[in-house]
Amino acid sequence: MVKVKWRELAQIPLQIGKTIWKYLLKPVFRLISPFFSLIWQRIQQDREFAVVLILTLTLIFTLIFGAILPVNQPFEGNLLVNSLGFTNQKNGQLLLKNVEKIQEISLAGKQGLTLSGTITNSNHPELNQKQELQIEILKDNEHNGQITITPKDSLTLREIRLQENDIIEDLTYAPFTKILKFYLRPANPAQPPRFLLNASSIQINLSDYQLKNIKLKNPENPLEFTLETTQFELTPQFPVDVNLTLPSKEQANIFWGNISVETVKFKELIQTGDNSNDNIIDSTILSGDIRMVNQDLKLEENQFLIIYPPGIQTLSRIQIIRPDPDHKLELKTSGNNLKLADPDQGLNVTFSGKTTQIQTGLNEKLPIAQIQGSWLSQHLSRDGVVAIISFCASLVVSLIAWLF
Image 1 (spheres, rainbow, N blue to C red):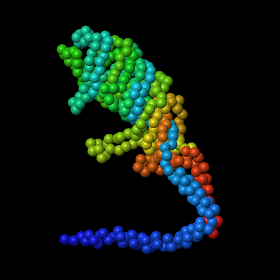
Image 2 (image 1 turned 120 degrees about the vertical axis):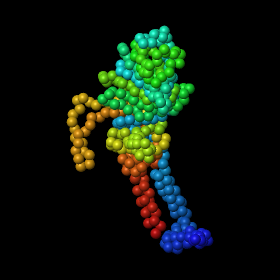
Image 3 (image 1 turned 45 degrees about the vertical axis):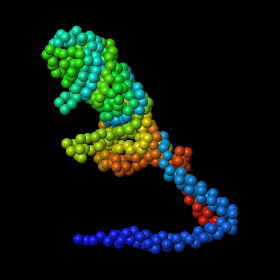
Image 4 (image 1 turned 90 degrees about the horizontal axis):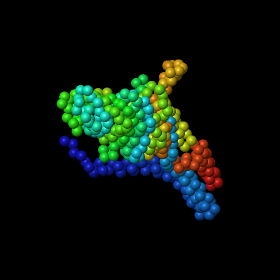
């Protein structure tokens, strides 16, 4: 058995320190000590030199410190993405407004809701006597409940309002199916988000459900019935998958602007198997640019955007970009290869916020380009900061020449 000599181990750091002093620090000190001695003599002999030296060194260190001190700077950007996610930061925040001629709405996940109006079902006469139906949609290991609403005439989504800290994940638009979908995580069941809808006659389809205020003689799953109403609302208290099938004809922008947010994500988790270690994170960015302190960063497909806190604070605009049917074929380069350019489609997102640093790259952990804000860059352009640093260098050279 080898005995550890603790006293010898304790002497190792001391020996390293002595070696560094003897072969590195001591020769450097001997080299620069005459220079400092000369400066000290000039200070004692010439007060004007002392004042100039102090002012010059103070200026140089202030400018250098100002050039490297990170400070939050405002930035703005515009991206075309496949999907995004964010956390809402304002109570009663309007997300969608006046979406007309919706083909279908479905909410999948645990929820409780009340539907009021004239109910019609030929298989269950007891339903026809009800003016109000209290429903619980089930979601567990055995149930995957869902409510699907299809208009018989017309259906308008008047608004979707979010509450503070409600989370939107995987907000995506599929151009071929015309489905706008997202995963909604309400933050507070006592103050849920609100879906307000207008319709005259709608078809309701319920799967994996329970009726709270009536018991059917012959229950069936799924259950379908017609509801005659004018206005009703959905208030999901638990996480739900939301799917909105939009009309074929393009509509004016349906997203409301200036949404106060935090933790905005332009990436998605791709699950490759049962083992979570096999999961990968992929960027959803297709193209775009971002600007801070008079500098621009261009983003290309699949690049990650890393923004230091506080980060994106406002989503100024979200707009659906549908493929142009008259799109002309174009070629684009990919390395040494040429390929057909796909028509622009997805979600166009304009945003702003504050940060000290922005980075981009194909590898989230190894970014290749960055913009960094500093105290000096708040007041000067990049060329101005370079000019100040060059001035400091020339000032030091002039000071040394004056000294000798």
